Image (tube, rainbow over all chains, first blue to last red; front, side, top):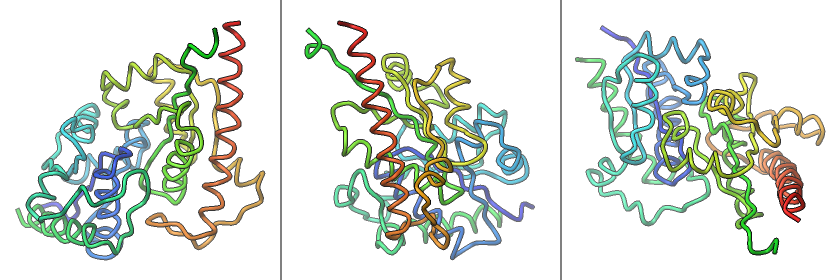
Length: 132
Length: 142
């Protein structure tokens, strides 16, 4: 059974991507520090050993900002399959997060209710994956 | 004649997640777009990593400015991987050294005034490069 989950964000620039990134920081730094690692897309693409190790050693949860699913495809490109792909838009709908109300082209504070709601849900998904 | 043509620069920041400089590069990208809205196309590393057609077209169409945050130089790696020679490169550590800024204590999840100063310095360096590249492109058509 895996003891950690690799959180792999899309790392785009749109607000959905920023929301995902900020939620990942909350999950990794506050909520599940010992159960998660943060996968960096550009580093994985550049074959940085730590990021190759992450997708080799741990199940990957890709959280995508849009339907291009770049994080999932990047893991594919490196010869692995993600355990779970989640889209921010689907999570937002499930959690009644108003994406239209979020700012574009700037940071979103990690105390923002939308970030907190996303982080809570992602942490629960991490727990589900580790329990599986 | 020159004003009828579109002179833009594609900006590829690493936009990673693991380090403080990841946030600096991302925020600098937003600032660069604000400072030169009509001359900049911000590229996403994620989309290029999987060769998304629209982004590949932008990469081919415009001269490229690469901004690397940390030592692996992942944005440069991506440009090399895709066969694109950058017209300019910026490495955040170089800007930090030049500007004598100290960002100790800053956090990747959100910057304070100290981190914002480095963002500003990176963005300023970037627009200088963008202006140079655009001028070079423009003059090459005259």
